[in-house]
Length: 176
Image 1 (cartoon, rainbow, N blue to C red):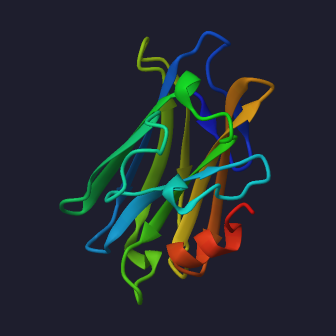
Image 2 (cartoon, rainbow, N blue to C red):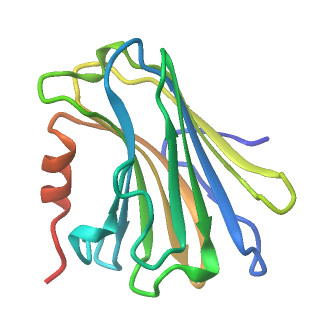
Image 3 (cartoon, rainbow, N blue to C red):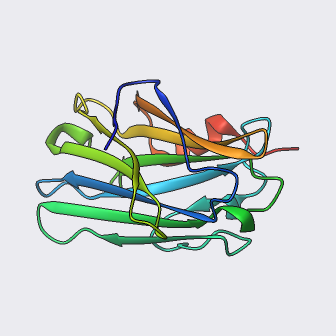
């Protein structure tokens, strides 16, 4: 298993790779949190509002990706199952974000955040990234899965954002 560092990139399989699973695990200690996935175009913008995945909108518009989340208790887990060859050609990047789901909350009680990518066909792990939130922010950008010359790679991010998930979506903006 490859341990990733901030901004490190790892290829996600070879040209015949059909799918990838992204697991996000964290300790929330009572903080209402969830995973969001922004499906971005080549300009790193949202093609539409439907290109934001979260627990209440768990499937991508093209049906290629599905988000499952379990947040009961202090330990939480989200899994995104992605059929790489089924992703709409307009989508070039999937951005994975851990965010609080309550207006005045921050990530102060969130710890042990890990993101792992693996091949559901073989069980082989592409990479794992562990990051710690400083607690003062509302969103933590975990990483991006993006197209590179018809192949996919994951870049670990670990970037914090002080605004809400809605503020982050507005900052990314809708494609015109």
